[in-house]
Amino acid sequence: MVVLSEDHSLPIVTVLVAYKAGSINDPPGKWGAMYLLQNMMFQGSENVDSMEHFLYINQAGGEFNALIFEDRTFFYQTIPSNYLPLVLWLESDRMLSLRFSSYGFDELKVRILENIKYRIENQPYLDTYFKFDQLIFNNMLYSHPVIGTEEGIKRITIEDIKNCYYTYYAPNNAILVIVGDFDKEKTIYWIKRYFESIPKRKVEAKSFPPVIPKNEIVKIYKSAFIPLPVIHLGYLISQYIPSDYYILKLIEYLFLRGNSSRLINKLKEKERLVFQLQGGLEKKGNMLLFKVFVVNNNVATMDKCLNIIISEIDKLKRSYISEKELQRAKNKLKADYYNKLSSTLERAILLANKIINGESIDSFDKELENYMKISSIDIMRVINRYFLSKNRIILKVLPK
Image (cartoon, rainbow, N blue to C red; front, side):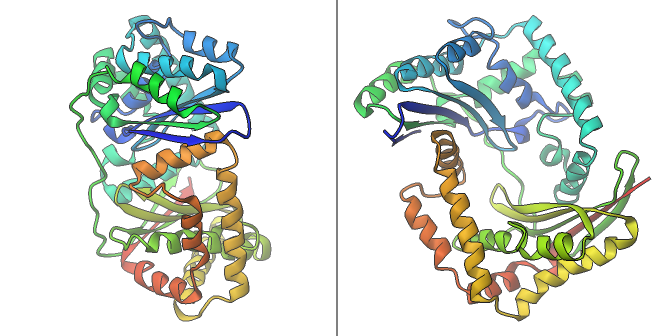
């Protein structure tokens, strides 16, 4: 699939190739294979030497990177417009003919293992996120770190990476997004020239298994790595009306976006119970998960903090939100939405995500209208429909 979005305000263009595969496509027990593959994509292809991709983009004065998530992987470059044919050729060459070098592969494994060790030492709360996801999915395939685990990385062979590449990195499993200053006719010519001859492959689709919550889950465990206690709270929304997504997203802003949002204002600004507070709405295949993550100041105040979070959510089940508070959340969402459209890269990422999520890309203004017309009645209806105790998951993690 190809998406072209013209913007002639600056002589730059972003090329993004999105593959509809991520960490959930790791072979069982070999956690981190897709992340390794993402890094192998810079190790050279039939007509491009190892790391030469970096050199081409740097010499053009461009920027590049890659991102991997649970169900998608992005490769992107932002370059002066006249280098668009070069980038399309680079992307097509590694889509068609990635080079697999044992030397480069072994080097990558060492580097990723060092990165995992660094994260464990410097991000002590990261492991608690995966413990929380395991409560929901009860399956490492859907709840392991995107970059893998030490044991998983060590098990991966170069044959595993080849299998992942030939299974998922195919034109019929990819989206090419081009945003910026380009000539449409010439660009279509280059796309056909470089990509049309790449053969399609049989793609093994994989997605999050449906989870139907029946009872509230509450677990406590201890960790020797964390300095302060944490709370993970989530509401799993396994089945939802598509139009309710906009209301759920605005609820995220009401509770968690900006110092005036309900939870940040109450727990951080007024009560001063938490050291860190974040969260939001996450898409897990066809499901949604509303998450709140809290680093508490101490163990003694954990229950008070948890009760406040649940109480603030339940308040909206009984009382309509004021128009002033609702408008404040809408203004914040609107500002963030326009920021996502402010650069060619952000717009390319937004477009790719929408396509993978099965959302319309026809009109950004129309989508914004869906948020702006939400009423206090809509908020109450959706809170009462989806934020129930039976689909609530709570994980408390205490320092040892």
